[in-house]
Image 1: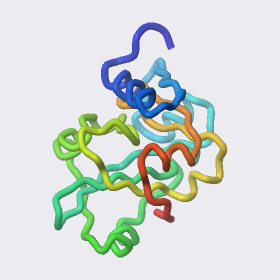
Image 2 (image 1 turned 120 degrees about the vertical axis):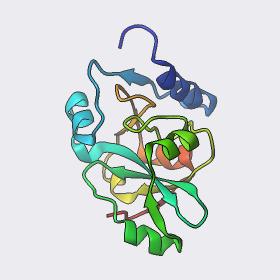
Image 3 (image 1 turned 135 degrees about the vertical axis):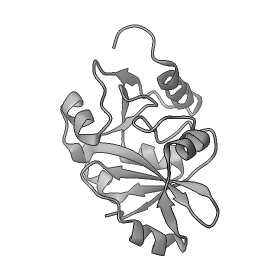
Image 4 (image 1 turned 30 degrees about the horizontal axis):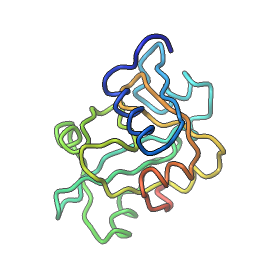
Length: 159
């Protein structure tokens, strides 16, 4: 990384610091909008990428953040049954309104509003994972336990 962070990535770095974490946001030379692109850029297994996906709780019209291993496909039916709530897709406008970030760089923290969060238990297979930091070129390393602390997320199987 050279030079200052992009504004959205700096917001994530500021939030990490505000919460007392020393994790550092790094910016990649190229965009990494998918878990595989991020893994290739970092040089880690795609399963170590903590991808943040926003869903819409249909009855409440509120966001649900699922932070899943990059190797896993999220089972929406399982989530819906677990939460006793209908879950739908969130469009780009809904995501931006509730998080303050555009799709492709959604971080697990630093959102405009507090989000109900589910954390994939498969992330706990790794001592270090990587999460988006507010921009498709920005990531930060963390532990799965830090992820749960930062998000106040509930750990469960999401696949």
